[in-house]
Length: 109
Image (cartoon, rainbow, N blue to C red; front, side, top):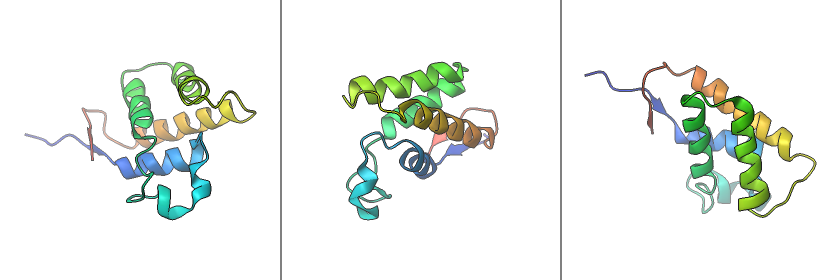
């Protein structure tokens, strides 16, 4: 049996923290948000949701809207000037990453 390709959670985290970071936790310093830090998994569920939406073929703009809603409504941050552009950049980066992985089923690693 062929093992499905793995999505590296560490790579998703790099994207999420460098491109999105809706609540500004990177300001706390590397020790808090890099892998192993107290906040490292803060955005995992949202980033994995983006992966799932893209893998199911959801339109990019709907996936961008999802991240905007997370920031504005669920995190209560409201809309700021960079909300949309950060969501767009994050979705694009995750989409590019997924394009590097063979198209069969994937596992998170």
